[in-house]
Image 1 (cartoon, rainbow, N blue to C red):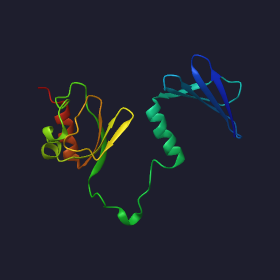
Image 2: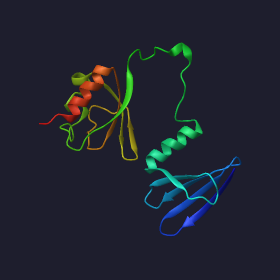
Image 3: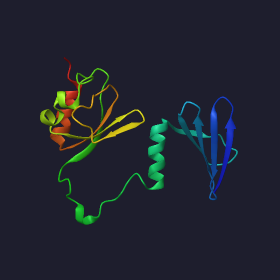
Length: 160
């Protein structure tokens, strides 16, 4: 595998990865943080855009490739959460909870979910306190059963 890096003036950087079995994978890192990924089967062929992603999502993809994003659980821990699920839920801009704190909303009392973290832009607030304010576009990392997740979705999308 060979990696070539090229500066693209006014755009960003291009990384081309040539594989021994054929094919070229190209990633363009734009100056604004956006990433675009392309694939072409032959070195002289036109590249097909696979996807474009944000800097934050690109970091998650890199963690997956690196093997640090997912840590498998051993077989003897199958029922650790017994029906509970961890989900990432975005707070809509027009949600009635925006501007309030976790405690004021009473998320756990009203829905049954526990908030593990709040992702706000590039920042992650781990183990948020009841005083943590909820803002539009925050992503809540919550754990609960299916009914609790449904109650949370309803709470976040209520029209007042």
